[in-house]
Length: 333
Image 1 (cartoon, one colour):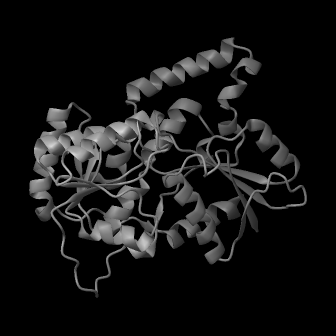
Image 2 (image 1 turned 90 degrees about the vertical axis):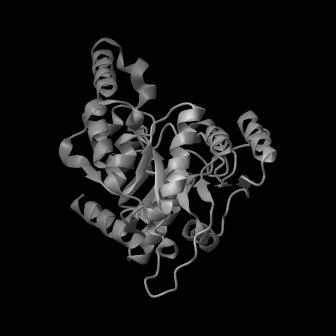
């Protein structure tokens, strides 16, 4: 069995958790004996049995793959949709169904809705995302599979090793972009007098949101410590193991890889009160409604004071476990 992994956005243009997920998926499949390569769009001699596409695929690409006798698997991230309420999703689903009935298909092609009907398997990260897909796009139920993120072994606490003393800092690992609310978190940390370390990079050095964040961090370097992104995975794991707690207060997520890395390290979690978070961590995390600076600061301070007494979050899967799940899905195709 040979799997070709594909994605539509070059990594050099936008870094983030999805890049890590794609890279680790390929490595985990190879470690489990599956021949896995990145799809080389320029190489007409490349062959394979399955295309695994990360994102919403072009329905025409699925048709061409089927014509070549290949199966097509799609891993979709419902970042925006998964952060809406069930009522909003039902309304959106009804509108999409109406559009399909009254608008010519050529005008709707850019939405790529047909991909959900044509893909041989649709992979989502949580039970909530499976519900989102069903409400909006009605893919065949038997083709929906829930496959969680994996976390590298370096992030897991070693029971036989000596515990690392936790610092007085909270940590947030996120791209410095409005969706992650890094500026709003920094403002709340200043108001709450809560030490906070930010790990992450912007999409562009001249981005106004990033420049605004730097201005806030420079006001109180004793409270806001910004060290950019940590590319060394062992160093990042140590940052989680030493932190007092992990904070991610984004407006939209699917299944945050950084939060699961922190969970593997036994780091208490404070997350935005969104469906993805509760479906992933349940009662083993603390949740904060998305609100103004004052309400966020109050929640942040409370979490900071209670962090050392909070239970550890539930442990995520290892990448080997994820590879085993993917192999079983591939085999059914």
